[in-house]
Length: 132
Image (cartoon, one colour):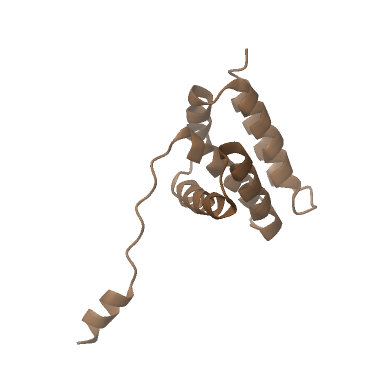
């Protein structure tokens, strides 16, 4: 009897968004923010501002995009897949700007964490590998 009621009360899981270059960029920003295992509100704010500026989004739309990026980041453990999509679809100047944005996210909480530093070094090599 109660099974039917509880089944209706459980929300359906949202489908995972398709990994586009744009969502991959956002997923890397989220991954950087989570690298120290503390997803701080100031880091979330920087991610939202970067997405808004990069894709000309309103604050609400950038928060929605970040939510998609968070789901994608959580489901895709391989950072290299994000880097490949970005290198193939985003021009070098935007990738350079992404590296600065990644550093901004890493430093948003005011603490220099070794995990964030290690991730940014990996991403700098990966995103810079295709620069000409």
